[in-house]
Length: 399
Length: 187
Image (cartoon, rainbow over all chains, first blue to last red; front, top):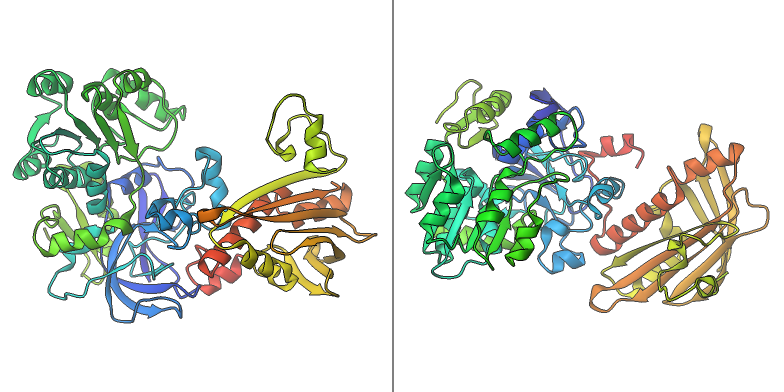
């Protein structure tokens, strides 16, 4: 089969690789019909996430049709499913508490030591996201082996709902929703969202659904700010305005009640601390540029809540730990417990309460995946989201 | 030497297990690893008590053949395609709670150990393995390296994780994309 594979920094290819097959009783094999390139895939593309190996198959947002099911899978051949990016066993203590991304069993035993050394505990199992998270083959491919297929995939029974509407249930939609949930939004709150990429835009929508009175969205790409405005957010362009000063004036000196960092370790911008962070990253003294989360902590109101869905990889310094404590902030973070949100968010999509298609700017053939990575990386204002369609003719990029 | 005997040597109050001691100097290499498994203690004990079940989740074991109720012969992969075996004897058995074993006289790698199953309420069962062995050098050292892949503690931890995966999910997690790749990886 064909698959998008990682070969190093800024080097992804469309290779021909071995087909997947059933290995364990709970497995299923999915023929991929739609798969997206995620913002966090750019962290792999830029070489920030350790333990990638040449030839690893990328992709963790995908959906398709079941073509084979193991004897203990609950799926049936022919079913249409969206697959969560988190691989979860459904049987361990953490899964029983619906903390699916903390699953103890999905990451193979030998790979668990990698995360344990860096983070104190093993990482969860994720599709297509390094050997630290299990070394599983990802979904930017014609076919995928889905372990624990009786726990993760959501069956989409309504054939009239197109892929575009439900694909993002696999990651960015529940991630945006959990980001807002972790911000513990109360009716009447003012919520600030840093970053208007896909997760940020879903966080904006989710915050309003949870009762926020005002949402202030922060970014520097005009098109992304325009999308945020479409959902009712006020916007701040950090290239044109000072973010802290703007937020203080807009909130009468109080600061936002809750803040959501949807930026993560590759923050843009030429701030002094940002430049230092970039130098450290390029000299392997550190991997994370934490400009966004610093600003979040300084701007959030006293006693407020900070939600950090953004991906960070390692250790940082110049972290405003004092402000976090002195202001009495609550910080909640984590990989998304995707399975927890699948049913309610599917219902919200079916009832047109959440719009998930506005984001897609480009559809490409799987073979054009490498071009897609480059465009998504270099032209983020116009390439808001790329969906790869295995089977579509190569070169036929469609908006 | 038991945990409590070892612990009584330490000054002051310290509830940490002796296997985490910075100062204890046992006459054999000593290690412990613990894992919590979301199943009842008795079920886990019963599975572990049948030595033929252990092959399914322990790496590098070729076979474990029962001799009688308390004795079994372990055959393990060794360097250069060789195999080595020894007889293991259960010396203490508390059904549902713990099993203690030691290698019979003349073993190439003298080893002994205990597996404990402690009820952990709504979390299931805490399974703790304590293993003591003589760290040999030379050819036998190579064998030990192979037997435990990198070091005994890591291998014990991985074996316990696979045990947990098997008991909680009915299978052992693998990232192999298909059975051919799985076979190529040797596990």
